[in-house]
Length: 367
Image 1: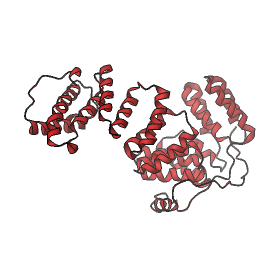
Image 2: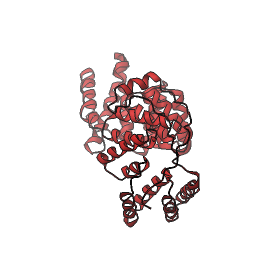
Image 3: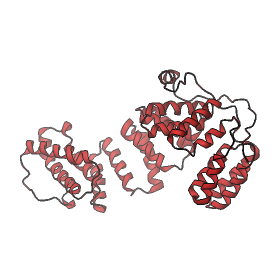
């Protein structure tokens, strides 16, 4: 087959625009470098024709049980059809690239030779096999032909995010949301772009929408936990998500234990947080995050009276020294803490308390 035939337009369905305010959208779009001066709506083109849907679902089922070859054969039948099932083509491209070798080469030649029929699908599918530069150009062509093609905006958002252009990535993610407000991947992309540009509250709402549709995505649940706990301080939301993660992954997961300690700390149970840090260190004496947090719990310089400093800073100094001993063994990845923050805190403690009367190297049992 040398071309794709896109079905005739169908009536667009009016869908809700989501929680982002009109003023917020207008403000962002007015500053856009992409000349996106007006909102878009859902595409009028059916990129999921019914006569190919059965093959697409069959391929997905085969992949779910590890039958790659069976899925490949089904997808080859799907892409040979005249009417384009866009997600079917995307699935074929991704599977062929994963399988590699002759399968990937055959797939690449197929799309290289694909005749441009004037549809948005052809430049979009070709773009997925290009580098960032050529990919962006083809995505713009696809959008010019169908400004409701949300896949193209998602890919542009990904490219710009990787290039550090977070505001442009957010613009593209908003466009994708206008075109497909109920698509889970759109909500995930928009959540990440909102978070990257400092709009934590809006990001949390989009993460919730994504997770409502994709409740098995545990890594995104943890991302949402970090946002609610550390950025928003939403203790109740964080507690609910953390409990769900502990049920799924086990409460003894080191990362989840650190989150549980942080939750206890933020609710005033400092002793409970310290107990968790010490439990972690008994199982892994090189867990530098637990060491640093434990030391910080005794330091808390802005919250200590002079009497409290005399009582707790000796412990903080000893734990900080253990932390620096991990650094000398290459067990710490955060150079700012190990070369600046912790040494400066030890110096401040020394200035207040005088030299450490016990210069010996601390052990984990001393903590």
